[in-house]
Image 1 (cartoon, helix red, strand yellow):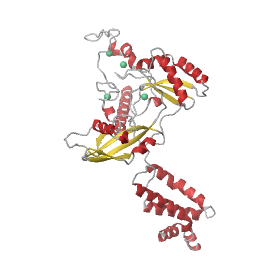
Image 2 (tube, rainbow, N blue to C red; image 1 turned 30 degrees about the horizontal axis):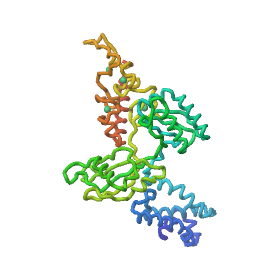
Image 3 (cartoon, helix red, strand yellow; image 1 turned 90 degrees about the vertical axis):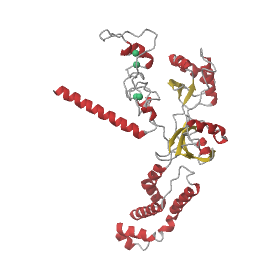
Length: 412
Ligand SMILES: [Zn+2]
Ligand SMILES: [Zn+2]
Ligand SMILES: [Zn+2]
Ligand SMILES: [Zn+2]
């Protein structure tokens, strides 16, 4: 180690290396840093991936770190050691550690909102008079001397969400629940208890073969059935069905990806990470995995790769035939439902009140299904970012080619 340091020094700072006696006083002062690195390495080795936040530092990395600290020390001899370590950490350590850390829990959406699961009918009723409800909710919050105020209501999958000016407490949530359940037509079945938004933790299960002893492929139902029987999974709620894939195309083992609702400090995930359980005759192990929320689909224009909050489309598109209208107005606005006497045979107008009997065309794959249908290859590949970027690239190239052709046409 010392030889290495001296060599580095001689190359980089030959003068100082000869004038300075020896680096011997420095190693004891640097030992704190080295000890920390060593400690980190030991912790990683002893927990064998138990902690998701530590990244192991190799021997070569540790040596490089010491060498670079020495260089900084030589360049700024007057600086105190603490400052030197700070400079080093900012320059080298932090980005490195950050890049290797497994981020298994999302920060989640803003907690300054209440999510209220409702039936579709009540959702429409609430959205129809959103301002009245905001006013009433704020009056009630005021009457219970709460300082939290509702700002606006928006529809969300399976209900509505109310944005607030601060995080709600239990009595605020109860007040909102009581009010919403008192709306005409609402009740215990139509409006469920409001809850604060939650984070998601991303986990995986390894150690289970893809082909089961009975010759069948492992399914997500097999996994959920086992999960239901186990005490280990009692405190957790899955956000969706687990996904089963082969560990690699030629592997006989499966990887099961599953996501759970969690707190921002991953309290639920910590109950599961690195725990094992029996799956038939096999021993399965739960591991943390990097967040993979998948590729989002925009619920405004139905394209993939962005969410409704960052959509730049001028208006809504219809899932049914990608027209410039919302699905509920498809029958009134879509060309397919309008009469056209010029066609052979002429097309009749769709009868009022009847649903559109015409074929579907997906905006993404042009297939005969709704843009959000789970038959769509875009939906099937929603966790495959590479596949989606390839498709996006292809779409960009097609657009560029068609623009070139159009420009060429006008010139002629
Ligand atoms: Zn969009
Ligand atoms: Zn339409
Ligand atoms: Zn139609
Ligand atoms: Zn499609």
